[in-house]
Length: 228
Image (spheres, rainbow, N blue to C red):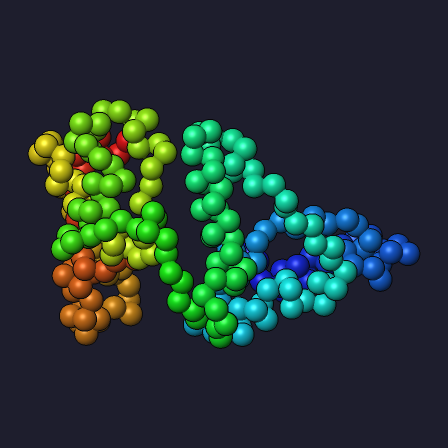
């Protein structure tokens, strides 16, 4: 979700463009439709706390008082692509997720709460957690490497890139193909301001170890079927 300042700037722009009797009305009297869920797509405020995030949301804008909130009453995900035999189970799971989002599970909280998960959504693990989740989500993984449909309705979601790398490395090891490894070539940009100190601090080893979102790691191993 965008910062409320974006909506307020859009509001002022429409008022200036229209320049009519509706100029004093929000968005120049034009009907604007916004879509979203405050529980899922709040604005991202770097190093901000909960208060900063709420202050940046549309809900905290002066425009919010003129908004009419329409709520979806039908879960469209249950209408398309959900097998009939799993419908009741899937509906119960979605209702449980909704209760968490509305704060009806976990008791009173000040931003943090403990939620007890039902047994049927928990993957029991022993010592190797990655092996447990991979074998549960992708059973007989090695037998379906050439079957793209096998991977289309399954996903493993994790919160951090380190876990993504660990799971990817584990699944690559399960592939029998020898594969090929590619290494990046990392170095400082040669500019007039570059000096020996910077080169010593940001050596190739340091740059190779750098990991960031949307940037491939220094070492990339590819095997047949790993990109499907």
